[in-house]
Image (cartoon, rainbow, N blue to C red):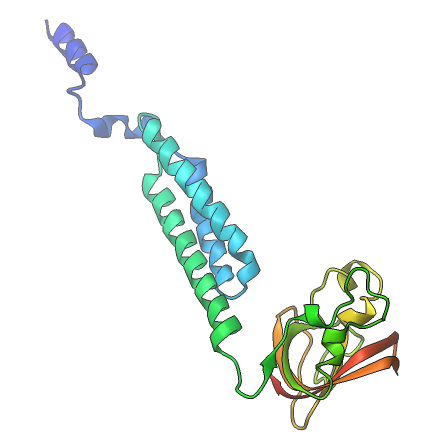
Length: 227
């Protein structure tokens, strides 16, 4: 009689659920979502890495749903939730920092211009566009990267490019993708993969100014602001 009673109790679900914990495994998806959540925090410092945040949110959501559907065999729902929260936090923080850097944390007195105004346009016959010629002698603020060169520390002059697509995969950037930057004393910079904001007076050289190790540049920036 006792055996029958125990058996019916087992199948009716009256047994303490804690007895089944030893048979449940932690969801690998939930653990991965948690790890990606921590890794995604770098997006707060580098906005392009918010893609990691989006992946973390998607994977965490998938993990949470999967654990809920398979809770008889899986655990890890709290891990998935923490991963989602971390990924959301990095997405929000990275976006907020990007907006602040791009639109609010700007020095006064400079005209903020995109590199696109300096670049050659489709169908254009002249080597540099009219939009660039119109900026000659004006105080502008450009965002870009230090072109990698032999010297990488305490630079007082360097070439600035809009991205690393060309220089990191071989070849010289397009002539209208390069700006020679000359820093006023006592400003100096080190090479890094961080995007910089540099302000100064733009000089346009339609005849191409020769510089060391490169074909030359059309643009020169006499800079007195670096961030």
